[in-house]
Image (cartoon, rainbow, N blue to C red):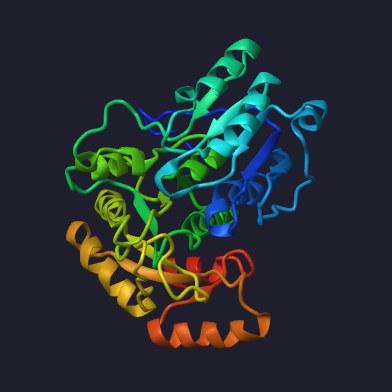
Length: 347
């Protein structure tokens, strides 16, 4: 169990969960549900997919009535959409779940209580409406002052490239080696997994770095906070949260996360495509700002998501990135993160 910094909100979801995918059409926007299935599979009983849904989390498909019969405690919106909205087409399903007594869990920017149908249904049954994207009330302005303890931050060449998965895999490897390490969640899915954290994309911009400092306070010299990254410094829509987190995290070590199957940034530009920056350029970009607050900041690895690539292409890709960066390159799900931790420890 991770230690909880003072002032952070804790979240206790009622298990087991019904993962709601609605009509989502791609895995990138289904990352909340897929993340819960990957890291908290024991709590996930089934999935509810609407008409047009093209994502399958590998769980049994269930209706609301079947979920109730199976003892499900919560319906969790498994989609992270641009703007954090809840489409009208979902309201009936969510209200039906609340009417049946299931807690409704949302990581969206909008509040569940803003939808009268859902609010009235929950009030009638006594179900809870849990909005995960709710930051602490009092967040200080960042100071940039050096804190004790050590920190590793995952950063990315784009959104939804594996920053959360990589951070969780790194924490797992550290703990397996007997290291004192905690995963620090900065997004809605990570908070659902860890039970605590700060949703940084809901924090007023002046307080972003302060929120990161609050999330990872001073600690013992041998303690590692493994901090979940957000967005990308090169993303025209979401770079603000990435920079605030980079400054506030004050990382000693960084791991770059990259999806080699992606040529253009996810969710950027209505009529214009923005190319994903090369891995080496992204590393230099991140180091420029990381060393503003920690001159000793260094990269210790590259984590690639090869789920969309044929296995026979993986070895050549790993070799290419390792020659390009001089860093260990792994798929954290397929390979684990031992080689990155070896580099971190100087082995």
